[in-house]
Image (tube, rainbow, N blue to C red; front, side):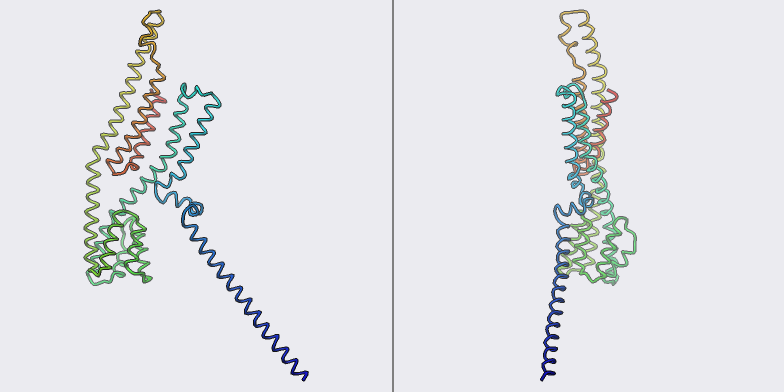
Length: 347
């Protein structure tokens, strides 16, 4: 009887221990799962909105040229406000009308806001042009391989071993995805999203929809190659034809700057000196015209006109030559700086 009781107590303790171990294991599993889901949720939050900007600031700011304004516009605004208050507190409100320091601060603020945007847009446009120039050859080669009897994954694998300039890394990534049995339609859509150019998105959409409809993919690829080739040729022809108008806009700015420089350095200066000489003689009509010419006022007025002319002429040149006003910022920055240098150091 005593032995029986000892055995029962042992069995009961063993059951409790198994239950305790099971509960501990379940709690550990739940903690691990919760930790995994928390990491997934954190990664999801870091890929959207402000969290993505905080986590990957350089990537977000350089992803699109316009995104650079997120950083440069606040900095330019701070420079302008701080410079304005510094001048007013140090020299009084009159410094705004008797000195060009505020103009210089304003030009610096404009350059801070526009130079990064102009640089990134120039780099983006060159990338887009290089990618779109290589697309027709890529589509034509894949179509040729497919027509020769190769499957699409094999055709893309063979083509990926070639050299297509800036397009090569994207083709190799497309080949890697298809080697992992990613469906062709999904892989080609991802290919177009990574390229992120108007021509690529249009061609990819055409190929994907034709593939879904069950058409001959090689024919569609060849049609996309012809379409992209015509698009690139038309875009190149348009840029070449509009180049003369861009040159006219730029030359017009330099003519405007030259005329203002001559007017300021000869005509107005001569009239002011003549008026001052007449005023020194005490003539009653001395103040009628010449002696009242304020050279500082007119020089500053003409400098504003030249800088405004240069900045907006650059935007017009970009719109005419490349179909985008932002593309003209590179001209605007150069002409704005030239006008500022001319009036600060030579006129």
